[in-house]
Length: 128
Image 1 (cartoon, rainbow, N blue to C red):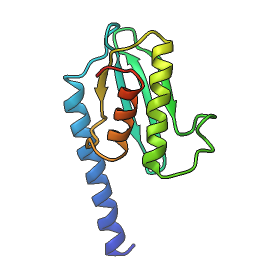
Image 2 (image 1 turned 30 degrees about the horizontal axis):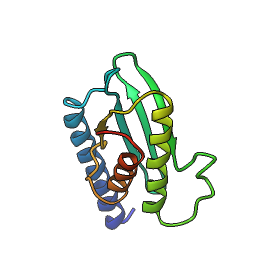
Image 3 (image 1 turned 90 degrees about the vertical axis):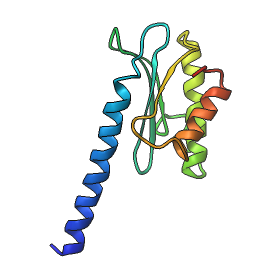
Image 4 (image 1 turned 90 degrees about the horizontal axis):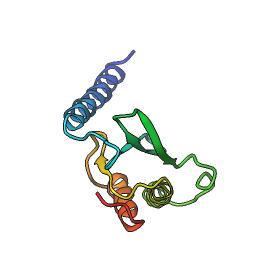
């Protein structure tokens, strides 16, 4: 292996570990209960996944992602697809009887795809 490959791998592991540290720190404060479940976000390089979770009972009340059948063929930028996921999770959460949620950004910075998803969920009727 070359030095560039080794340092690149260490850098990406460092970023991942930093995100996980931030996520654990945030999760000490953000807990989903029945009256206000947690809206948990995970993003990969290609996709965005969202769940509405009641941590007291350990149940997922609603979920959506860019891999859903209704969004699988969606074209456009990743940020636009994140907006569609935000709208979809708002619809599914309201169908499950949830209107208020605690936003868990998963250790990611609140900009780009994460902010677009959150804004679309708010426009869809979820209250953070």
